[in-house]
Length: 145
Image (cartoon, rainbow, N blue to C red; front, side):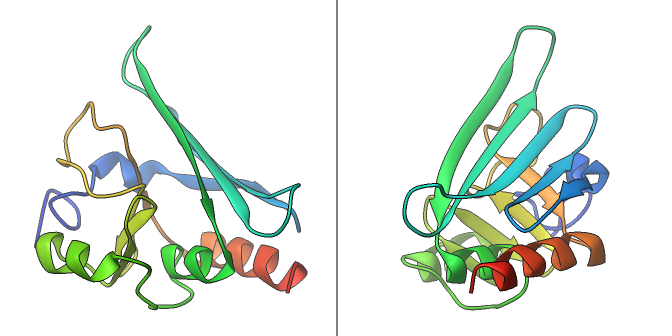
C-alpha cells in the first residue's frame, strides 16, 4: 500500500483537513477546497454525513450518506469493526475497516464513501484522522448513546 501519503486510494489533500467545529450534534471538518459535516439525523437514529470537494471554479463533487453508531465509530477510527460488505473492499483495496458505499479506512487514512484513484477529480473525500477528530466523533457518539 502506498500513495504519496497513505494508501493508493487516499488523496494527499486529506492531510489538510482539520476539525473546525463540533458539539453534541455535529462535527465539521474542512480544508481550503473540501468540507465534511457529520450531523445527528433528525429522523430516527444515526448520522448524515455530507461532503463537498471543489475541483475548480465551477467543478465540484458532493455527496451524502447515512451511518449508524457502529459505522461512524469504525469510519472515524474509534473501532475496527468491519461493516456490511466491507471485507471484500479490504481484500481488494487494502485497509483496516470498510463498509461498502460508506467508507474505507486504513489506520488514520479515511475515504468517504469509498476508495478512489488518489488523484484530483475523485468524487470521494479523504481525511487523515487525528486526536481532535477522534475526540469530536467520540463526543457526538457518547452524547447520543
